[in-house]
Length: 430
Image 1 (tube, rainbow, N blue to C red):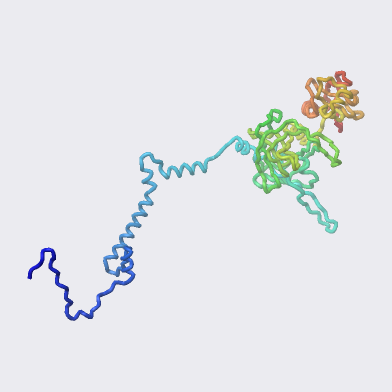
Image 2: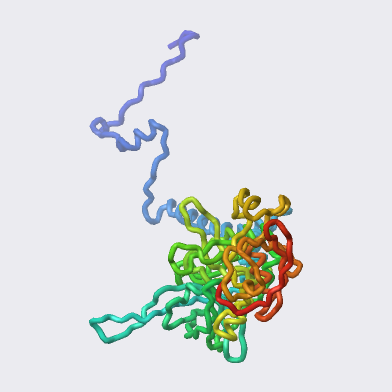
């Protein structure tokens, strides 16, 4: 049979073998078919003993290899040219974190901190319903160990810290507690001296020179604000002012009895800091923290007694139990507190004189009375030193003179300058 050239011969149709017409072809599961249609990979279940077991062996090998590489990574990174090793970097950071940071402040604190102590005022209280008399803690403040002699040590603190105490306890920097004996107090300067056993004392404060302080100079306050729970607290600030005169009511009658001579600082001073140390960056004691101005509109005005005023007081308290002061026997007022009208009309001061100290009252029988000083005399010079205010007068009188010494004054009386010499007595009035 022939074929046209453009029609290829048809292939013979396949014939089913006999006996297979009723046999069904095996069908793939629907899930597998659907995955194929979506062209997603199939998950093949491999039975034990099949070749698929190699998959798990290979996976385990990859995991072990990755672990080894991860462990070696720090060393491999460190071997790269120009790179810093991770171990060196970590070491440097550790050294920085553990570095011994030392500053002028930390050095000063290290030098003096152990001389600052806690002072606990214990007072006896009695209950009329009970015959027992038990000591109760009335308050806590701070103090400074300034001297060690033989088996005794001496502590300076504020008079108001130990006032009314029947027993005084000193807490050292290491927490040790030692009973102390009160040697003397001075209400005028608000100072007190204590004596205690020195067996556990390791540090004594070194005195500085408060007269050489400069405004703006860094100072450090160390003490126990709010009690012994915050013992040894350190605050820093600057000398805000020198030769400040603060009016003080000593007997609670709302009348000014005294002008306290103080340093002003903005270092934080809180209740419990009283009697603590104010030190310079050399770690030297330059003041005894005493008080702060506490008013709603006032912030950062702390006050300390200059150490140059403290030293002569504690020497007398240690030796006599009281401050033996040379006294002129007068009460005084600064010229700057007098109105311009009375400066010219009442005191008759020359126009060029705007400072000095006015005598308000003269005590009968005193050194000033014997020298015939009078009310409204204006003191402008003592022993050749210019006197501008009561602070200058007290500094010269208490630091330079002793009982029995002669004192030469220059005073204006009704506009006339005159010179007066008096012999200082141990009077009770000033």
